[in-house]
Every structure is written in C-alpha cells, then in structure tokens.
Image (cartoon, rainbow, N blue to C red; front, side):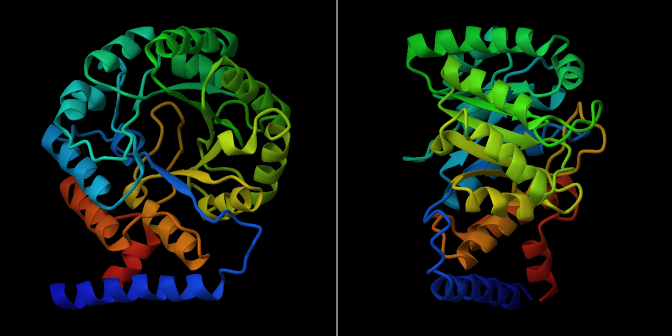
Length: 325
C-alpha cells in the first residue's frame, strides 16, 4: 500500500507539472510566489492538547526539507494566554536552520521581542487588526495603542538590524463587528508599513471573505502600500481561501501565507477554522505554472506526520485525494 501511495503521489506532482506547461502563457499572474508557512505557529497555537516540543521541531525540519522559503517557527507570547507556545525558546533553538530559509517568530510586544532575540530570532512579526472590538478582545487595547506597541518593537528591531513583518487581522470581516471597511484596512496597513514593516500580511481571520470583497479590500490597500510589500493570509471557514488567494495573485500579490494540512484557527476569533492548506496552494500554483520551489511530495509527508501526531485528519483536499487514490 505504501508503494502504491508513493507512486500515486508522484503522479499528482507530474500532473501538476504538465498543467504548468499548458498554462504558462497566463501573464496576469506572478511567475514566482513566496509561500510563508505558518503551520508551526498559527496552525498549532489553537490546539487544546500540548504538542510535544520534539514534534514541533521535527515538523519545522520537514517543512524546511520540503523547500518552503519561510517557516514561522513559534510565538513569544505569554504562556498564560497561549500555553501551546510556552516552549518557544526550545523550539527556535532546536530546529535545523537551513540556508536560505527564514524562521520568523511572532512577538506581540517588546517583552516578547526581547525574549525572541535572546533565543536567537533573526526576524520577528508584529500584529494589528482593522477591527477595534477584535483588538480589544485580542490585546485588551485600542488599534492605536496596539500600533504603539508595534512601534516599540519596530524601533528596537531597526536598531538591531532585525526585519519585521506585520500582520493585519480581520481584513475581510470580524467576529464582533461584522463587515470591515476597506478604507480602515488600508489605514492600518499604511501605518504599519510606514513604521517599518517590510511586508504586510492581510488576514481574513475568520474566513468570511469572498473574491469580490477581497478585490475591493486589496484595491484600497494598494493605494497606500506597494504591491510587492503585500501578502494574503486566508482562512478556509467558508471554502473561499483558494478563490480569494487567486484573486490576490491576479492583482499582483506574490506572497501567500498558508498552513500545512490546513491547520489553524484563532484563539480570539470564535468560528475561525483552519488556514489555507499549503498542499492545496502548492498544487494550484504548480498547475498555473507559478514557481514556488516547494517539493509537494515532501510537503505531503510533513502534513501526514503532524496529522498522525495530532491524531486528526488533514484538511488538505490534495492530501485527502492522494490518500483515496
């Protein structure tokens, strides 16, 4: 059975390659996409049972072996609020650092930033939101106050030569406020970019967005932030993650966040299901002739590993189809 499954997986990769040849004339799409793998952090932070440190380390190493250029390793948050990330320093120190691969960590405040740097972090991420109520629930402060915390991290990171990525949550909808104005998203994104974030990841935190809403939001943000500095981060609650991502690609975005096996959610966003599955994203991009540098076979193996460790089924449609074949 293992041999049959292996050959079928190879055939899937081959089919994707054939499709890439047939669709390579599509010139409205980027020729290359950088995938930011968020599974080890955003994917695991919501797990109720503590995932062993060695399992996290092995997962990150397998994702590195698959050729993902960016693997978000962990989060330096208070263990009181996110106990799943309490082994952050051990994870960051325990993983293999592959040449050419970045391992950013999330640092919600200056204290987290200091701990991350002490553990050897070479890149950090900060986060804000386009919703006042979500920000209050998530960080117990206003949007402006949360951006002040970000700025404190950014100033220290700038002095230390450490790049900072920025996340904006609830860009297509909020569990507390409902619809979010594209102008508000653009305002927050502009402020974070102006403060020094080299890249702004726009997150559909609860996965309620549709392609039309994604287009309107990106149109507004692109007036304030250069397109090469933008990324999208789509959750798949309503099955719209791939469609929304494709719209972003058609509009020129070339950085996409995703999570192996579709793991993820948000501790502060009730109803948020998993992220866009990295396997599904890689398969679609290969079919469009877009280069990622990711080995789908090794990625599937990483997804299978973490799903076995968590004793759950994968949310990746590509992985599910491979198993059925």
